[in-house]
Image 1 (cartoon, helix red, strand yellow):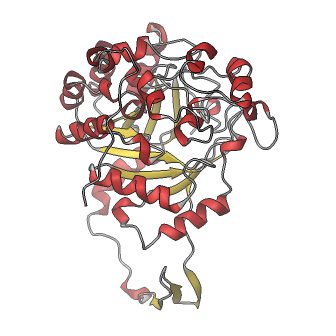
Image 2 (cartoon, rainbow, N blue to C red; image 1 turned 90 degrees about the horizontal axis):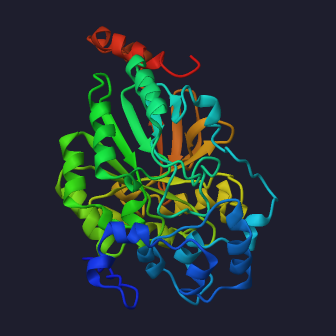
Length: 398
């Protein structure tokens, strides 16, 4: 079966040339009450959100992404990710400004070193869409743009000295709001650090402005390979013809692409929606990688699902969805504990030396442990131990 991806029509009066220009999309982003009132029949809750909640966390969207959303239906999934509502002003539940505890793992300004072998580099605080459930509201949207020269050099100095770091993840904000020239500088500087093996880019641009993925930009990714691209589709309708073409262009040119979705109440919290998104992504050769719990950032309580609901969704998909299409359910421990995987428990009993399991379709079986005398280490393990120790002992605060 081949999926059909809808082509998005430009705003009335906008030429195809302008509409397909990423610079035009950025320059003409919607950010005010008046902007959104021209394109949506706003509800009372949305009006309150635009006039009040936007003061705490700014509102912005590309024209392209607005065109994906329903004009009249206030419960439209895409619309709910764009527009603030009065619910953001409700302070109930668990809401914190830094839910991942990133500040305590920041050895230098704009760097987050939570895990031994990888560092997050916040190269910009700007996005072309400010998702209403954003986990980094304490940093994003403060109009600081590209990292300053002194801060940038200090970050590079730290990365050069952190020899256990094998991977640098460019994030923000959205790195692809930067110009090609600035991105080339960052990629070139990181690739010059001998122990950095992998560069990863986290971006929602393929979702909200796929025309940004120009041939020139993709050539940059090829030039500094291996560059892994992590995108962030939450709903099947975000996969338009334009988005699908951008993703395929990345993969066709040797850039591996992974997707990280967030489970959001009233938007995608049903196995039918998750499987539809996952299968369409896989068809485009994009690996569904993570299915995250929504982090308890300020103003996001109404978006969050319970862990029990999320596990029920995952269990329903288990066995009915190809392992290639199955995203890993995960949550970040509030306060800086890092990611933990959440996996259905199929164990139904057992005793010493054996475990009994029941699969997704009810079939049971016993798995026997091997005899203890069979255990032996790989004969060449010492060859790899120095590298392992270098990574294991690295990390901010270690």
